[in-house]
Each structure stands twice: as structure tokens, then as C-alpha cells.
Length: 128
Image 1: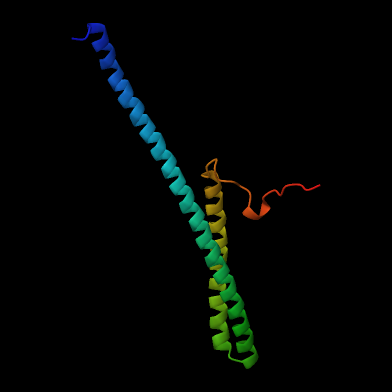
Image 2 (image 1 turned 90 degrees about the horizontal axis):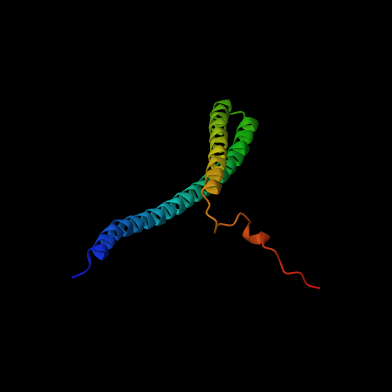
């Protein structure tokens, strides 16, 4: 049989070991969640940038159409096109605002491994 002091020590060590393991699992889980949130914010910023670009292209197309409608004298279709153009410009502004919001959120959740430099801005070795 084991001495009483050794049994008491092993009984105290078990809860501490379990607590340490649980704490390690929680910390690694938090890091994974933070990384997932960062990836979500980054993807949302990309999605809103694409929507912003599409709205810009749609607005340019609609502006051209409305000019031709005005020159053709079709005021009813011109007014409809202007309303649609206003709606698209509002959507463009909304997308720009949301993109900026998600970019800021992605920057805040970026981990230490995430670099804030663009890949094209890497430093080149100096040649003499």
C-alpha cells in the first residue's frame, strides 16, 4: 500500500490536472473561434466589395441607358431609370459602409500570424 501522504498528494493533483486540461482546451477553443470570426469578417468584407463593384457597374450602365432615353424623348422610362439609379447608388453607399465596417472588424480580430502588409509590399533584399 501507498503511504497516506502520497495518497493525499495524488488526490489533490487530480483536480488540478483536470482543471489545467480543461483550461487548455478552452483556450485553444477560443483561439479557433477567434480565427473563425476573423475569417467570417474577412469574407463579408470581400462580399460587400464585390457587391459594391457590381452596383458601380450597374449604375454606369443605367446612366448610359437613361441618357439615351432622355435623348429619345421617352420621359416615363427615363424617370423609371432615374429612380432605379437612385436605388442602386443607395445600395452602393450601403455596401461601401458595410465593407469598411467588416474590414475594421477583421483587423481587430486578426491574430499575430496575420500580417497587416499586402503580399505585394513584401520587402525585397537590398542588392549592392
